[in-house]
Length: 174
Picture (cartoon, rainbow, N blue to C red):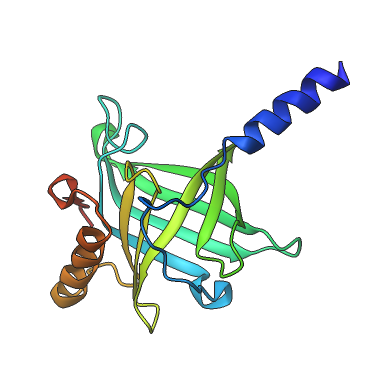
């Protein structure tokens, strides 16, 4: 029984995305203490867990906390516009998958992890652009509920520079 379980775990570990020549560049270094706190979603690529026939997330926030075990606690919240604004929350955990902390692995359903790559970050940590190496996911985050137009333009330009289809970006209702 232990051998099949071990083999399955090794196979799952091998599925982790490795950087390649056609993957987006990340920022190189993220100070997780400065990154911790609450971010507001300014825009995103539509996703099945935020945009479907049952859910349309608005007023989206993500709160990151450093945990004593070295991992990062994640709490995502939104109001579901299709359910009268009912709050939805998802709790997860993340860990750094790179020496510079700019590539994280996030799980909301263990043992499944997704890639969370920081591809753009304002020097003052006012905004961030987060995506996946396959470019299927993208989020533009801001420390403020309303992102300044110049900051938003810089974030979108970062996504475009890294090969994301900016035509897929949808602004998030505050």
